[in-house]
Image (cartoon, rainbow, N blue to C red; front, side, top):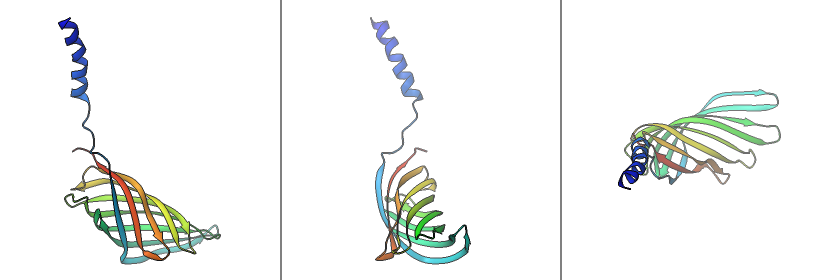
Length: 162
């Protein structure tokens, strides 16, 4: 019986040795994006009845996320007033009191031009420094027509082990 029990424990021990370490428990972070430290028109053109407007801007984030994001995004404005937004950027700062670092941010949103409203999804990944191993996804790019200079984000993040 003792030998049989030892044979049963061997696969469990091997499983524990080869099972990779798990990421940290996902945590919901919320922040407000303040537009704009800078806002520069990069390009504007019309194609297929749609207007494409690309901007480069720097946002300041406060809340669980502290720092700045340098981003480029494109508005696609359809003739019916519907809006699509696609963008990416580099965040520099801290998340939940982490050490400072950088992380790539990408987002997509939809909405309307008049009134100006958007709702979207954001992804955070490829962190360095204090944000190494960060992964997150959630809502972002949400702007209220009463305060278009302020956006909100709510992202579930975790950190992969180094």
